[in-house]
Image 1 (cartoon, rainbow, N blue to C red):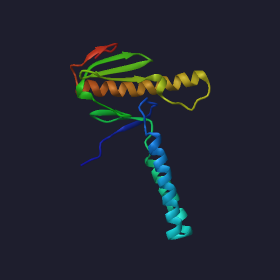
Image 2: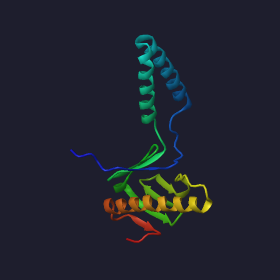
Image 3: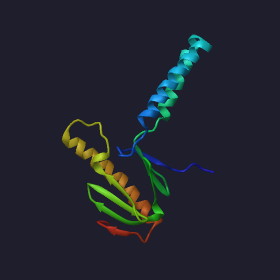
Image 4: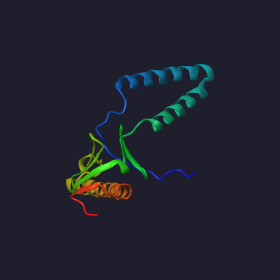
Length: 155
């Protein structure tokens, strides 16, 4: 079985990643792990603990949007393309996907991060990234749900 093709983009969604209690518990657990590793293995235990820390940092949840072939995942929100009833595009600003009764997902241009420093370059980079991601979402929704209602879009 082949692994699915998933595109991942940095996106500053508003969903909460991890609560502060979990962060504190993880930090205390890491300190206990560090102390045990040093006590049991001596100086090589320090290296073992830091490798564990790097792995944990790599696996820590990040603010991203993932576009799969049949769905998108953004924070705690999952949108199946086939369930989308209405799609509304406001060019250069935001894309709204409405599925089910109350399921509304809004992709906003302003939430795409950029490393640029000049205002014109920041706007350009955010617009390019928004256009790229929204085009992929629109194409996949139209493939999965050809009867979707469109506003601001053409087939």
